[in-house]
Length: 165
Image (tube, rainbow, N blue to C red; front, side, top):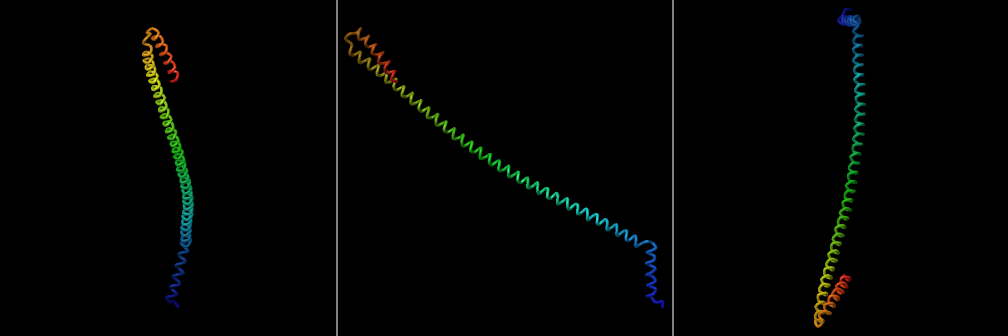
């Protein structure tokens, strides 16, 4: 009756009794519970960190989107300003060219008027001199009357010609 199996059973029962006496199952259970709690806390912390990371990712994506929109608006604004500046410069250039053309035309007209006035003045002087010589030749006979008529005609011709110019 006392075989090896029997003694192995007795040893097993004694082993369990010793374990129970020293509260080993409770200690193992406590250690396992602590480990389970620690794992649960780590999982909760990991879940919390994941949520924070997702929030940060969403926030940065939103900031990136807003920044891209602002950059696009800045570029569009710069293009509009460049177009306005180009149009303004084109208009100013056209106005400058028109002013310069008008000034050149005015100078040409003034030079033309001055040239005509000089030619008329020279023609008057030549005509007066010619009239004087002709009259002088015709009235050489009567010197006193001739001088009076000469000077009178000379003044009349000069006045008349100057009115024309």
